[in-house]
Image (cartoon, rainbow, N blue to C red; front, side, top):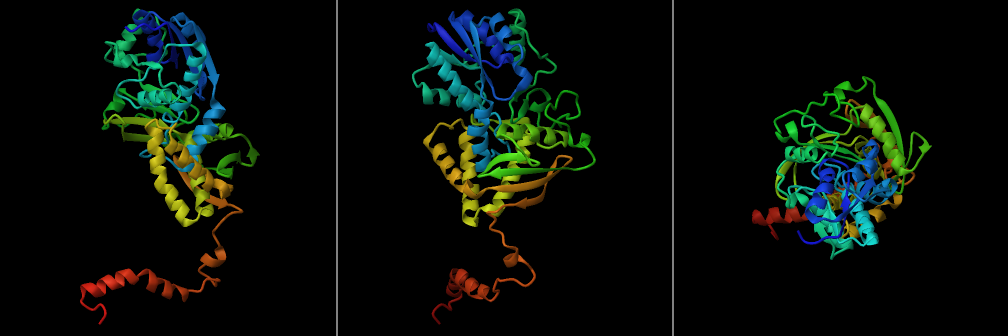
Length: 405
């Protein structure tokens, strides 16, 4: 292997990164510095320092990135209304912030290389490496899955057992998972066959909530307040955005909200199947969208919806740190100036149902829209229709040989 003296590893403590530490030392003979980012994965961070050092890392950084993650990545994406084929981008926008801070540590430590545990089949390798290129364009990148002889997760477990690397999984529960404050993803095992219905009732499968069948028989109402598109309160209690998500995760999870079974089109060209849990995010997306129906004019709302597809593609494809993403975010921020108000939603057995919306910037006028007596002059519609339909009428007259006759 090319000589490397010091390598910084993006370390989660999962199967891939756990065995990468001894693999790097065996194959590159380098010092390994591990970096773990707290983006809201909770108990997964417990015992990481002891584990990382026991398997050969010289030190471990644990970075608290939760609020930065929420405020600088999650909220701007939610405001854009961006989703990728229905997926609310939980893994996608976590990778740029993690990679950016890994680069910061690598530069601080004077490292020769940065390593990640992403497979050669997935999207995350692109997300990590595009971010690294954005902030350390000359840094060497080591991606073991593109180098080593291990072919499967079973091979990884064999390697871990041979090198006394402790694991929290077994071969039977070896789903590939990614967890943060926003979501939890599940891939692998029985989910690899799209014909298999996920066993949502199986103990331990769902972690952020329950299946709709197990949800209460009574609905739960929740009110969410926004200021300029940023969530600021739940049920009248002011809180920072990360706490809004925590509260909504609990409420959504208890009511079976936010479970998505998706066959998606990966960036590398293949289709893949995964199950996503995004209870709080699903509620927040709905609430924000409902409020925008009051506060945005038609043309802005429609343009924003079109650009949301482009925004989602950029996030999914790892292009967060690009001029186009920044430009789209500037547009979105401008649209949020009047997105202030309150939304009430009803949560019931996996459903999120509109139950009321209020805003001092509402463009809706009951006096104009009412079926009763209103200030709208219905006679005005005749002239509008004549002008709006003039091109259609002219084309029809031409086709019938009647134009100018």
